[in-house]
Amino acid sequence: MPTDDIELRPHQKQAVTAVARALRTGARASVVAACGTGKTLIAARSATRLVPCGRVLVLVPTLDLLAQTAQVWRAAGRRGPAVAVCSARQALDHDPVGGDTPMTTSAQELAARLPADLTGQVTVYATYASLHAVACAHRAFDLPAWDLVIVDDADAWLRFDHPVRAEEIALALSLRVLAPKSAEWRRGLAAARRYHQAHHHLDVPQNFEDTDRYPLGRWLTWQRRLHATGALDAARAAALERLGVVWDPRRQAWDRGHAHAAAWAGAHGHLTVPVDEQHDGFALGRWLATQRSRSRRLTPGRVAALAALDPWWNPPWPLTWQRTYRAVQRHLEGGHDVNGGTTAPGQDAEGARLERWLRVQRARPERLDPRQRQLLDGIGTPGTPAPEPAAGSQPRRRRTFEEMLVVAAAFRAREGHLDVPQRHTEPIEPTEHTGHTGQKGGTAEAPVRLGRWISNQRRRRAALPPERVAALDALGMHWNPAEGAPPAH
Image (cartoon, rainbow, N blue to C red):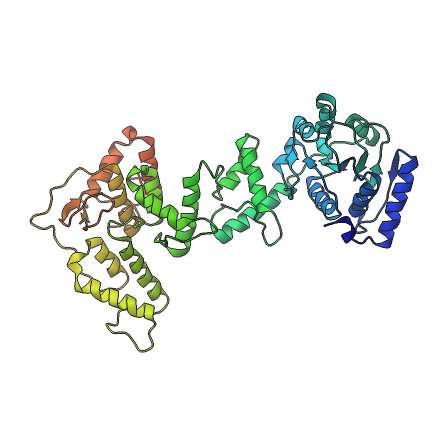
């Protein structure tokens, strides 16, 4: 807002006048003011009055105070180029300054941003611990002198009438470098945990601020920058990784999509997401549609990761059937009855539609995959036992690892484990639509010998590619059954 929009109180006006009078004749002045009297605003107005078009250096003890000072100065009408400077260690505890004020720890970058021909109001906000960077910018990169230096230290402000170098500032103030604290970083982590608890992911929009006005989006952007340069402490990186942080949203687009899928599945219990669904600003429905269209090209690990969220994320029958089945589940969970055979008086249109759909499924069970009938049985719909393989069924064919992984994921979702008895078989009956296997036609296939396949994977573990081991691990594979949980069969 313009400077004139903030009306100074009488004591603040008196202070600004006194500062201006003292610095017209002297090199320095001190102002003592109690907390809450607006000394930051007094400093901003004094700078505008004394140096309306000059270079001002503002030194503060902590990064928190730096952010607050920059915000007050902007509100008080301070315009023009501005840079925030902190030490490399303080950067790890970064509390974003916000606005259009970039932050740097580099003396060279500071000098490059503020060349000698830069005119107007030029402001640098710096912490005590970053003073060496300011000194280096003067000494090695010819950073121009300051017209005014304001120091928040025992409420002392200084103005140097002659060209000032940072070494002189340090000598005059006898500044000691304060050990930066990690309070700012802990504050950011706490905000990240609150967001994760509410949204079940950490894909935070860039400009997001929480209810406490904490700029979590900018804070995470800074953490990603530190991580990319190797400057983020390993323990801090691990803390964010436990919340599912995506370090490089562009290069890790799949991980970002999976984080949203996991959050959706956690809230809804499945991945039958409407194609136009936006989840916290992310186009989750379209992302899942893309994964289904590319299912044969996905790595085993990614297939397993999605199957662990919902074994029927890419069902071998029409997705419209799966969506209607989920709608029936939701209707029943809401306390409604869709199994009555006739529409009850006053029943809503959705309930009537679902009841009609169920009647069609019951009337023609032979058209359903055995696993579809199992799903319907699981929600209380009268089902039909899975038929024995037809006389003309196809002989067993050699299935790909990816296909078997999907079968294993379905077993785990149903049984809660992957300890499959060695002689166990899973029924397979493709529909007329292309599914996981890519096969078309309605001829029944022989059951899959899942137990034998699991046993073979255990036996061949040492020879398996790492990505296949990881895919099975994601499903809870017990490589040594004697040490794992006993089978539930």
